[in-house]
Length: 278
Image 1: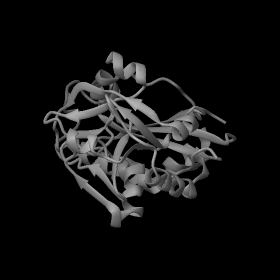
Image 2 (image 1 turned 90 degrees about the horizontal axis):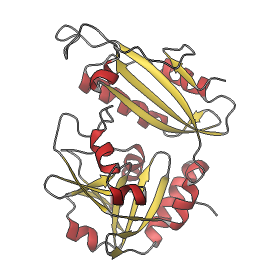
Image 3 (image 1 turned 90 degrees about the vertical axis):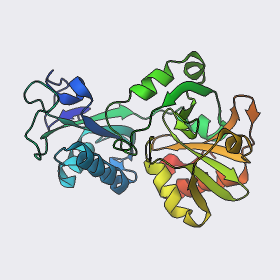
């Protein structure tokens, strides 16, 4: 039972030449695991592969990544595993490898304890401020989970966001994109609305499975603050916390409604690890 593997070895230190350390040149996934079984593995693996393609990284085999994930969380009933694929160091400078050649990757797989406090969030919900920081547009990096998360670091340091533990993030045109660490859905009647993320934001795994399961009731669109204010219900989702209701944003109050609980129940049917408390 090992908590950290780097390229399959039991070590816990990266070389200073690692390009994720130097430049944020890498991608990662944070995965909920039950008895060493990753939840929604195929979706996480597909996003890793897409990120590697966009950033010019060699993609490791699925077999290798699964074996290392299962090794680090062996013997644990519930855990959170982070897989990071970072470009290995080459020569000094931004371009470390010949044009057209994929960068060799370093695999870092770390197991973290399961955060038990997430169950209370799923049951009682959360109150959120709207962050001051605005997400810049970057179509090349939109959707993937790359290692440069300075937008989220800056936002999380705002006093109101730090106190709440989360905050709503807008883009440079004041459209709603997400929270600091989760995707957002609005409920209007029985319809689900989630922001388009072609210019910034992350295509979350839980968001993607909700969009697939409730396709006939889902719409992706530019979400204005007026649309957010008029929503019947609002909820956040990510791979570890599952779905948790939003009860307040700024001065706007929201009910924990039937649609939010319906989606929670559906997600819980896929994995009891993501179910709301009884």
